Length: 146
Image 1 (cartoon, rainbow, N blue to C red):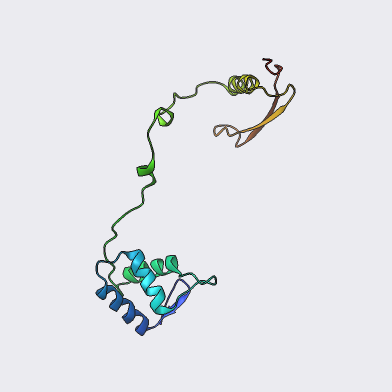
Image 2: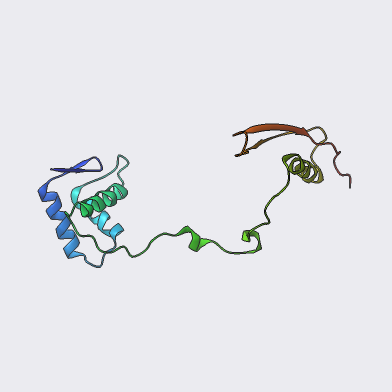
């Protein structure tokens, strides 16, 4: 018996997995994990297949030399889904002291019609000095009138 992902795999289980791999050479790894789960009756409590556990187990079996998986066909790369626009372009480096940034923040929020006297709490991480510095400020201008 060999244990992977909380399940004991017998020699018969490994032979069945090898058979599934040889009978389905063009099937993806995900498809093979579904076939394996069904063949071994490996289900979650909610009745779904334990696909991810099976994929991990099969990768570890391959690492241990027990099976040979087909080559991975697709690697997920989140950067491929990024739509580059002017909003994703790099912004200029901020070279202002904290109090100058705080004033800019106050004016920005005051221009967006916040009620006079609303408190804003900002957590600023300053790596060089304090790990975390909590600041508080009040908006000094009254809301815009139209």
